[in-house]
Length: 252
Image (cartoon, rainbow, N blue to C red; front, top):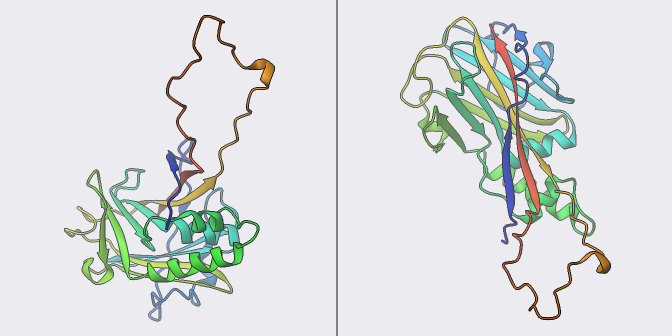
């Protein structure tokens, strides 16, 4: 599969003011991490500054349960392409102490990028089918980032009690996680306090604007006694730009 050049850059969104405070409910006994979100409707709130992206939060003494629902096709494609990453600051700030990316997809190719951009003429249906298959194949692993250390891709049964599930169906794309709040070697280095900082990170794909080629009368002309410029060609522009967007909130 041919990979297209991609430019990656980060936008730390939502850092200009205090993060909104969300109150987590107590989890009912029947709460299950299954990617269905049947027990969440009354607990859902919008993710800050995101349309059609909702979050539900429940907390007990030992864990935080989170559901994020991408309620339209654009948001679903964002999560399916880049996975949903949650950043957790156990002290209530915006430090990226623990990052959990689920699903944990492999690098994407050109067909999946076109699907993420909303499809293309002649083959968008097959590209979307490929994106859905890639989404399904990535549900058995999670990518974990602890502070400044490189990310690690682990099977879900190797993560000290972390639970995660996702499904892409009629109601949108649903991601559920249950994150232990106690300290462990795999997840949080210290137990979480009364207020937790939570960053919801998704990606945006954009096609960079095309450069206008100069007209014939605008191109530099070599002098009669000089040879034409044969210097290095300009670097190829990336086919897509990938922008990561993080929306921060606080959970009590």
